[in-house]
Image (cartoon, rainbow, N blue to C red; front, side):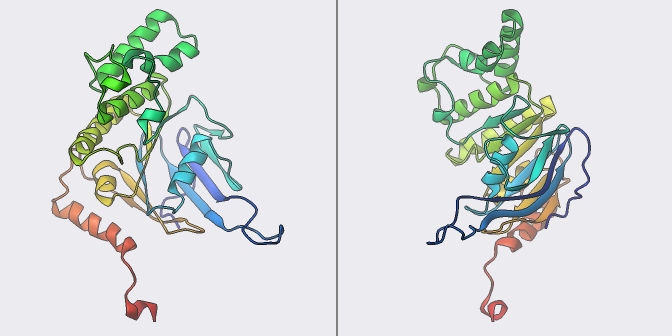
Length: 272
């Protein structure tokens, strides 16, 4: 289970004894109980923390993220964000998806995409334009305001997603492997951009990845998931190294090795 305390600090995120299962089971009997995807997950994330959910594919980390976002309901337990129980999506949680093409509107310009939520919320025009300008500048898209998504690279599309989320001023940014589809060079640039956005805004960030190096480069804390089914957080590792981080440093090297040990295949001696 997680090494983090489960006592809730006001203004943060509390995941309390949360479990999730899907469907009615795969057997012939309708009474058969399906397995848990997640089982008894408890975690406290203080306001403003950059927190990583790390695990192999299918371990339930994205399921947990979707419950925090309000897209899924927990089977047992609950989630509090800013002292309010999560039951549905809300403006207090901005979500950035891996596939930007399905998340941003191809018929709107960069500026129109970034300001979409504000316009739907009837934010006064002057305030909306000022916010859009500030958020576009924050993610480094100055000069691209009038471009359409078809004219943008993959990294630029993700910047649009991030800027749109920040424009709505959520307390929490939720990112589900947002850089997984990018090439290595663009991914590194976007990691640095996200750190910049986090430092400038003070948002709480929840970030899902299966990449250990990405987790260590970005996160203040890394929650490591067991494989599913009945996945849980086996340890939460704190990383105190300053930004920007040098992954070749001895301290981070030890942290990387420690995290890697959770993913090593058991030897024949261990199995016997």
